[in-house]
Amino acid sequence: MKYLVVLGDGMADEPGPGKKTPLEIADTPWMDKIARDGAMGMVRTIPEGCEAGSDIANLGILGYDPRRYYTGRGPLEAASRGISLAPSDIAYRCNLVTVNAGIMADFSAGHISSSEGEQLIESLEGSLPGIRFYPGISYRNLLVVHDGSGAVTFPPHDIVGREIAPYLPEGSDAAILRAGMEKSRAVFADHPVNRARVAGGKIPASQVWPWSGGKYPSLPCFSDMYGLAGGVISAVDLLAGIARCAGMEVITVPGATGYLDTDYQAKARYAVRALERLDFLYLHVEAPDEAGHLGDADEKVAAIEGVDGMIGTIMQEFSGTIAVLPDHPTPLRLKTHTADPVPFAILGKGKDGTRSFSEREGMKGKYGTIEATEFLPLLFS
Ligand SMILES: [Zn+2]
Image (cartoon, rainbow, N blue to C red; front, side):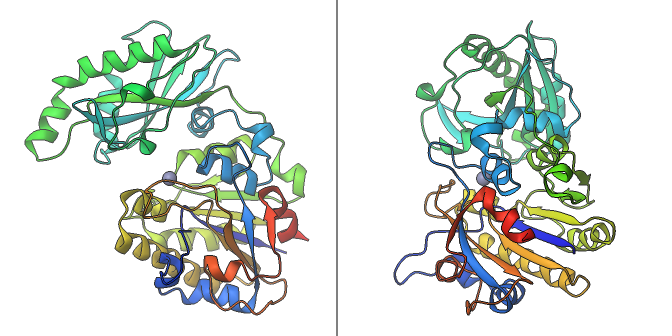
């Protein structure tokens, strides 16, 4: 038996009376077919007391209880890039952000390109003892504190439009992190990359913003847990990092950007090929979440329809068991994640009368509400 899980990041929204969610508005014949010919339920992906985010949610869905295994987003992304951490290293996600007059204006520095980001991040390397900077994809870079012990930090996407002052790092590593942020403000202020961006009508990357630091997590091997050869397709470092820590194959798809312009059909083609040799594929698409963060309803619907078209292409070739779900809601109204349970649908294990893939239909499904770590055991049962 072969299994495909399609994870549409942030697809879910807030169902309310008299108001349709993006999943209900979008034209999604393939997801609806999975619901109609299959069965649905709701899954609680964010355990009580955990922060609502893709790291927590995806770990849980893959069967790793985040309360036990989650150490931070930074170390997972470090794993995805093959950066080896010493036992005393703390790896932080290091966003390039735009702060304007003390206000967090953009958590992504205008979705800065990877080549611009790399030049900015490399200009910081070696500037402070005890800190190393690693360039990544777009605004998503890494900062490693040697002999660190962690800090209380805040995700920059949660404070857009707010004063940054109350959200600066606190705790053991705070001084060195704040020094790194200060240094970046000085180095970036007159950086050629920013001069060119401003001249081209774009917003500058004014500084780095480190968050979600931790030590390298030790996850049990996916194949030992389930007896299946598993792989992950994702344009996002975080997912590739979870996959590497879990001993799963990471499949890179050219044209998969982790943004609204991603190549859905390329992902579909690579998925079909990967499923010829793997038992299990986890196919993650970031775009709906990004649209949710922008609060852009049309883009969110378009991203969901892109995911659906991708599923359609795969379903014409693949006859194994298919499941579809979001990792968490990213409601347009809030522009950030929430911890509410999300709908899932499984095709290939019986029907329950649900008619389309949506939050409201998921609540009527026969599986009821399950915990994230119960999801794969249910799928494989
Ligand atoms: Zn998000």
